[in-house]
Amino acid sequence: MAAKKTLSDEDAALWDAVKQTVKPLGQRKVVASAPPPRRPVRAPRPADPLDAPRVPAPAAAIDRRTARRLARGQMAIDRKLDLHGRTQEQALSLLTMAVQQLYAQGGGCLLVVTGRGGRRFRQTGDVPAAYRRREDFAPEGGVLKRQVPLWLTGAELGGFVYAYGPAADSHGGAGALYVMVRRRR
Image 1 (spheres, rainbow, N blue to C red):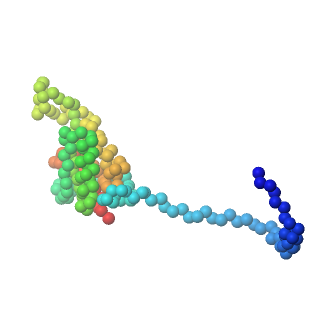
Image 2: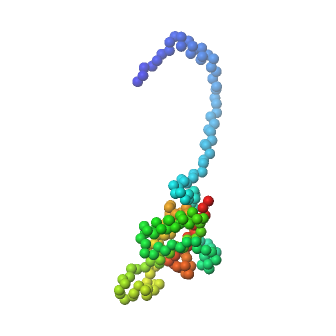
Image 3: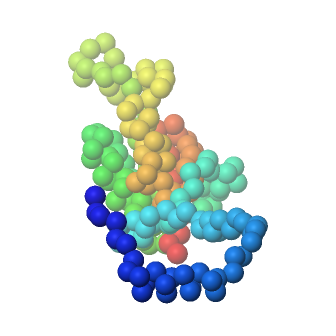
């Protein structure tokens, strides 16, 4: 602990003279200052050179009018991606690349074919693979059919996709999805 310093006689006299000239302020009301205005929180800028939108909104279902126009061929499908026979890792990589490339080209519609997914059939057996019926497929679908919607709404692709929904029968039906990719700003 430091030793307490005392004032010399000269300094003490000077201090007393200063105290005589000071006038007390009296009672003041303390007014609390307003907190500083809050700035809106911005999403961090992606490191991706394609520059994804800054505030991604969750992907919605494709509206009925757009789905009808796609099914009738009145609206173009800009790109098709077939994921049959791919592993999850390969499928995610291909899907990410396709969505980002379509975004870089100005957005549009991507047709993603996942397949319906079904039980594994042996090539030799009672029912050959070529004669499978709709009821032979698993009701919940295959792995890719379940995973692709999760990937489209996830952190990696959510900023690029604004809507997706099931494809028309002419484009793959229950085994395919229309994916609407945002326009690049």
